[in-house]
Length: 119
Length: 112
Image 1 (cartoon, rainbow over the protein chains, first blue to last red):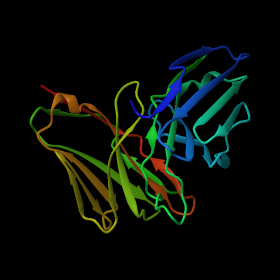
Image 2 (image 1 turned 90 degrees about the vertical axis):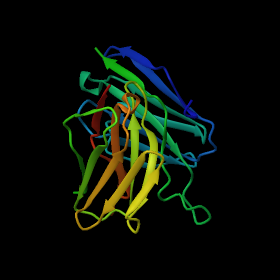
Image 3 (image 1 turned 30 degrees about the vertical axis):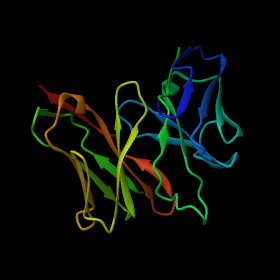
């Protein structure tokens, strides 16, 4: 149990479908992340949220739409995806940054990912 | 641009030997490096962090070194076991962007 739960674990969707990935963390962290992991490539950062505010969008296509309703939950809404979007999508969390807490080098806590296949 | 590179070739070693994995960085000077382990179908799990002013860090059978002259970190597993077989990732925050960037990982296979 990593403390970060992702659902579903596997998802197959057609290019015209709309689906959502869900991430939930119970670690008391305030920063949450979406990463994409494709074979033979480094983890690619997609989005970062700090205290529910999006602080980073790493030039991600608009067919990926994140939502962070509170510090414990993160969603990734998917629509009109392409086959090259097939990958493992990982959610992660970390303690908040701020003067009171030195979290600059805090490790990330990852979920086990959603394996997405776009047909 | 800032880069972290790991040997993409799989490392095969015999049980009981020491495994050594390499992480090289270019075009920036990270204040620290992190190492993660990833098993198939799972997310990465944090193992160790080493700061630039630390030459070496140990945790049980794991040892990490940080050589700012060579721009390299080495990750060692002593007395390796088949259960150590996994992909090992290094990561650090890169320069001006401050993003946590990862290497591609090195697959370690420990043969019984």
